[in-house]
Length: 206
Image (cartoon, rainbow, N blue to C red; front, side, top):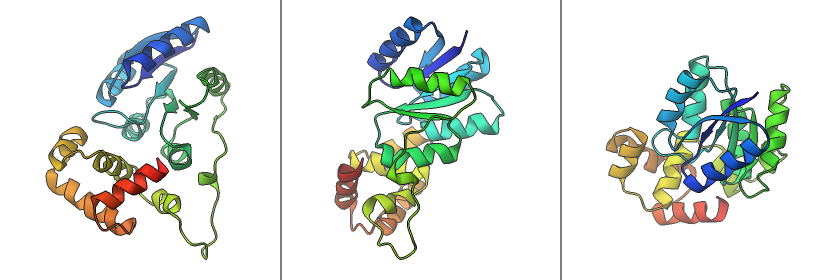
């Protein structure tokens, strides 16, 4: 039997996944709403597959995957998220995820992804974010966003929600000064004059 760990900040999603997975005869060995606990539970429970959202408090999904790889923990990771696939699929591939399923699709697609990953395959939908652009192509907003690091994208989404530097620093376990540095870097990379313009970019693309 395949053992699965669920990591999602939303209780209703965790409940829905529990019902779906148990109906399909998978064993849910644990669940949590944050990245730090996800790492602890993975070490303790040794799940075969982790169903993981990117948008988590504290350690986000990208950092969780990175630390799993660095720790040589062999659980496979399927990202299940409501975030824009055009922005996030390529990032998930680069960080080492084994699959990607959008919450905007039928959750039954997750079962297909789990079966594929169990058989040793990766499962990622095709998206424009995976296509290469010629050097002469004018960069659009989404193309500029693909140039950001995973942590820069996380900080950008916090800023767009109006979260203060102090709160961002607390959630991401970084200093206020580091948050300010990220903010300046984001405005430079995205050609934005202020946080309002950054928020507009997020609203149009995420």
